[in-house]
Amino acid sequence: MASAKKLPKRIAAPTKKKAVKKAAVKQPAKAGKATAPKKFPVPVIRPLRSSHTIYIDSSFFFPPNNAEGYTDDSQAGRYTITLNGMLQAPLALPVGTTIKAVTIYYKNTSTESMPIAILKKSIDHYCFSGEVEVSLDNCPPGTSAPDNYLAKLINHFDGGGVIIDKYLYFIQVYSTGKIDEAQWRTLRGIRIDYTY
Image (cartoon, rainbow, N blue to C red; front, side, top):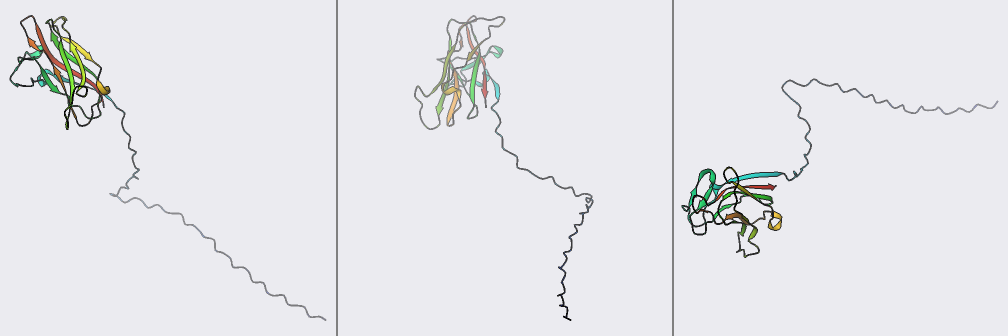
């Protein structure tokens, strides 16, 4: 009888242990120790240009040559007793501002207009005509009840009214004065409307 062949013993494949995940147990927060919220970078958003208005009283205007050469008639405004009747003041606006309008408040019961010049000068060179002018206009005579207070709107400006870096801006009002009790040419103040 033929001998039966012995079959080799099968070796069982090693069994993998299943990984058992332990559930994380939340620990209660310790008293007095707050958890800081996550910080996210804040995007930089340039704000839209917004409209602004400033008023400048006549007390900010002086004659160019003589600080004592003016008279303040309170509510009626200021005039100068110097030769050309000029008063001037700086326009202190931030670089990049766009002037939209300048309103001159005045009294002019005479027969002549009061010329207005909005000008600029460079901090590093002399500005000739053509560069210096920002706007030229005039305040015509007129009457208005009850006090003859008038307003002149100026809305035309060189360069679109943009305040340029390295320039100094100012306004001049010419021919102010009190000729007699019936004829007054006074500056009461100005209003500037601008965006920035």
